[in-house]
Every structure is written in structure tokens, then in C-alpha cells.
Amino acid sequence: MYSCLLWTLFTTTQPMLTTDAMKTCIATEKHLIETASKYKMDPFVIASLIWHESRYKKDATSKKNACGLTQVRGFYVKKTCKELYNPKVSIEIGTKILYSHKKRGKNLTKALECYNSGNKCYAPLYAKKILKLSNQLKRLSKKSSNKSSTK
Image 1: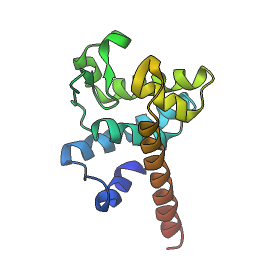
Image 2: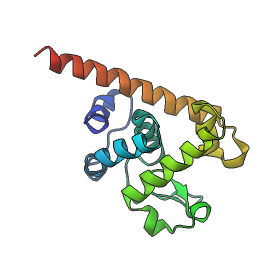
Image 3: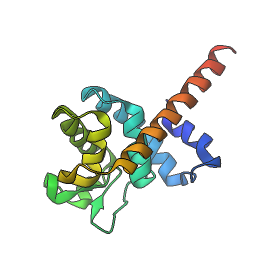
């Protein structure tokens, strides 16, 4: 629908998705939208979080052993990296974690900071990057939908 194709427009300012990452993005896009809707989250924010965390590499693992598209640390959610490498599981859990931070009375910026730093809830640059990417995606989406509706 939106994010996978829009990422290709980012190539002038952002690294391009690999072929495998693009396939993962396309294959999971519907699930991402449904999951974001389920948790009343903005799908552009979730897509931006995934892009920032893993560049849509479903088997991404960080030095701190955060795994999958949304880079969740398994011991927080009682899942193994193997389980978190499943894109649908990763999207569900990552979105649920962000939602839970937001539900605790935090605004989206603070919820993103908590997502990145855990209980410290202090990562202003991280939140700023995710929100900036999300806003860029929204603008590109509007431009592309305006172009297609005028044809």
C-alpha cells in the first residue's frame, strides 16, 4: 500500500532496502496496517520504527540481542530470537510494546523514547528520528496519492 514503495523514494536521503528486505516489507504490510489499527497506532510510525530498527531485515539481531524487525529483546517478552524473526510476531510485539508505553499516559514522543531506552524513557534523538521519518512517509504518501488521483 504505502511504505514499501515509499521507501524507494527515500534513496536520496536514506539507504535503500535490500531485495530481501523489500520482499519482507511487501509481505508484511497488510499485517502492519492491521496491527497498528488494532492498537490504535499510526502505521507510518510503526513502519518508520521498523525501518530505523532493522531496515526490514527480518533476521536482524543487535549487539544487545534485540531481534527481528522491531528489535525486541526476547527476555522482556519471553520469546526467543527465532520466534522474533517471524515478521508478524515481531510487528505484533513491537507495536504492543509501543502501545503499552503510550497507554501509560505518555505521548507518542515519550512512548518512543521508552521503547528505545526501556525504563529510562529518555531517548529524545531516537523519538525525533522516528517521528521525522513518519512525517516524511506521510508527505510522500499524500503526494503519490494526489498524483494517482489526478490521472
